[in-house]
Length: 299
Ligand code: SF4
Ligand code: SF4
Image (cartoon, rainbow, N blue to C red; front, side, top):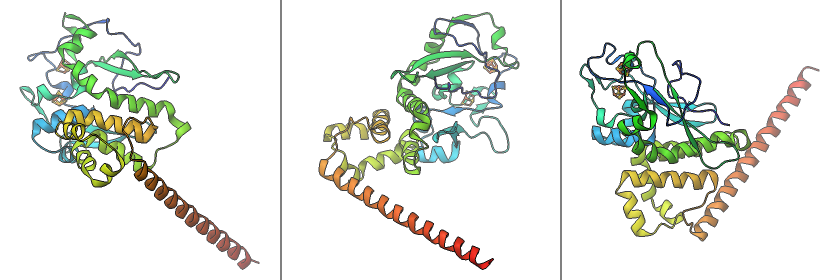
């Protein structure tokens, strides 16, 4: 089983996993003694849907959002790109933290909505579907656990608007799990595929430009109506991005290819690979020659 993705890596997560029916004793409200403590020291991973919501809220492009509000990181050592919130300059607090609370509350990210619950998506190697399970994060500073309110995780997810957030980021979670579970058999993805993954998942405005390029239109045969619909709707475009990545990274074909253009592209890739192999062989031969020369010099 692949490792779960815990969004609070430095937190003391209770190691037992619980189901949606599990009830937690928790409530967070303005006026509580620890108000904003959780937002003062952040380590928050973002999902692609989090980016859509926040860039829209801020009225900026995804490219600007990534540059100003996030830092990239590598999820485990699988070469899977992730992004985290960039805290305030020289500190650890969230840039959206205000004395009265979260400045982007209705568009706050998934991890903030879940807290103090952690979503653990996982997938058995022999199963296609992912399963959700949950863990509870208990940190000393959080007094919300001392409030006498019992709520099941299922109801907590509803209360926090998480059903929509999880549904619209599901395609991304599946891609991450698929890559993690295929791990060493496929090996570290190439730089090009890591760049594609990053752009398609997090930089939706760049991905839109990519889909509008002539080269994309030449290779992928998307019906005009469908293309128009996805280009004008970020959410639809994001779901298409996950579909596109399943095709280019895992060969799950769902977008028709123009046979002639695909053949042409394959020939170009093969030609490029041949040139690279020849260059590598030349380099190896040159190195061997230099080594021999060096050895002769010591005689
Ligand atoms: S986005 Fe809002 S809830 Fe999340 S850490 Fe920042 S201030 Fe807190
Ligand atoms: S109760 Fe917990 S989640 Fe709410 S403000 Fe305090 S530390 Fe943050």
